[in-house]
Amino acid sequence: MDRVNTPLDNTHTKFRLQEKDFSIFVAQAEQFTCEVLCQLLKQQGYNVVGKAVELEDTLTQIRLKKPQCVILESEMSGTRSIDLVKQVQSDDQRTKFILYTSKPDLTLVAHAMQQGFFGFLYANDGLDELYKCFQTIYTGGYYYSPGFLSLLKNFGIKVLTEEKKQELNNLTTREVEVLRLIADGMIGYCIADRLNISYRTLANHKTNITQKLRLNSCRELPNYAISVREHLAEL
Image 1 (cartoon, rainbow, N blue to C red):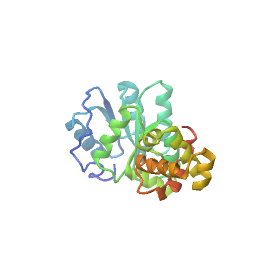
Image 2 (image 1 turned 45 degrees about the vertical axis):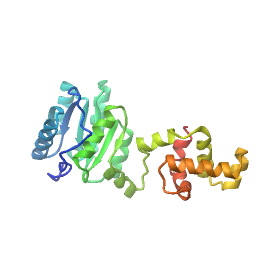
Image 3 (image 1 turned 30 degrees about the vertical axis):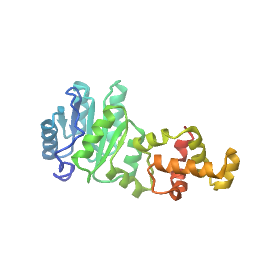
Image 4 (image 1 turned 90 degrees about the vertical axis):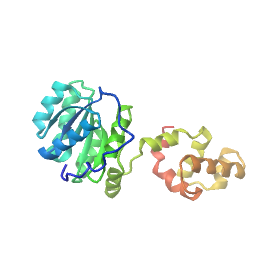
């Protein structure tokens, strides 16, 4: 990590895992920052099983210690970090990788999102985000920190977080149908006719969808529906 206080600035969190068997390996480019992060994690009760500042040492230790989680700084190895993940996966390891980046690289980010990383953190994130990431990947989810999502937005990339997916999964079958038609650009009366419902019923559906998705008003539905169109097709 290129700044000592990032993401090492928040020491209190309610997201800390209590399970001692959640083993963590820290792979950072700078020795000092690597040591500091390891100590902070240990103080919070995490089981830190190792650390490394070079890629070759990282791979060797992962194979030896078989950690459940690896915090891998992209600046330590650049695109070679993708090769490391592939090698670990080829060993039939169940290790989950968290990508930490302080220098945005669109190519690396795009490959990481497709190649076995479960967590994504950016330089401006605090420790609380790291703990939230642990909690999410420990329970089988994927975590994108606010800082990382902002980075993707700058790249023109949109990502549907686990939280948003869950909100969409909470919609009824009819509400999903309404949202799909909104995403297709259909206006109110046309949607009501297509679904053979009254306009008032449609309005109620829109209100319920807006509340479940925690939007400010029904006016936000068209843009939102378009942004999640691919996920709607899977529901």
